Length: 321
Figure 1 (cartoon, helix red, strand yellow):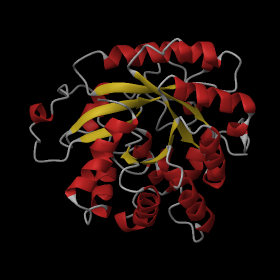
Figure 2: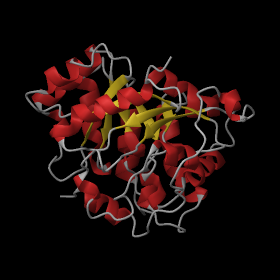
Figure 3: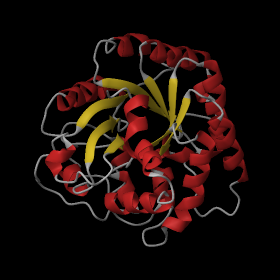
């Protein structure tokens, strides 16, 4: 069974590139304030960051490229000039005892006006007995937009998200007006479709195009599973992350295009959102390199549709209004 560490390590053997440490100018949420009004504004729905002095991330222990701090100042530097106007923090798999601390930390960041973070998807364990109390405590916290439980790690077997308690918890998330992000192995996307049917009133978001394998010679199962999932109207697809399934210097926009296009066609222009997966994306591509590649793939679409992908859909899906 694949651990989170093995998943990342198996995807890449290269180190992080293109990340600049240190301070930079703050990024106001007003795109005009960033001097890039000619660019389509970007809402980044998958922004990670961590301070290892505050949080324990066991999965980074043996991953030298990621086993260091990645702070807001680093993010602002990495995304500078791209007109990123809003971001959604994505949980970073802290130890369960630190989940509340993580949530409180990002709520505080969302309430500041010196950065573009305006919402957060926090960590949760839907199968645990304490999940109801844990997530209900945030029901009146507008900065908390959703929950994620990473499903691609070794301790979560196939079908884990279909257990009775898990399904009950995902339904509760929807009742609280939140969404649920699905980060899962590419061979288990059919589980997401079953979960969507079981939780029709909860907005689900499939992360990383279902972790598609970029250079696979046979993506037939992934393609059919994505197409079937795309028929579920309560599911959106996040165009993000799967670039780590390449190697630095060994991919082109043309290599990424089949995955992006199939997801786009399966979910349609109104149910796809952009995510950087920074800093994990830097294992194989810089932030700007990933955005540039996605823009290259999408250049044939109208400006209206490109704006939906990069901005408008995210506002609706994550209720950023």
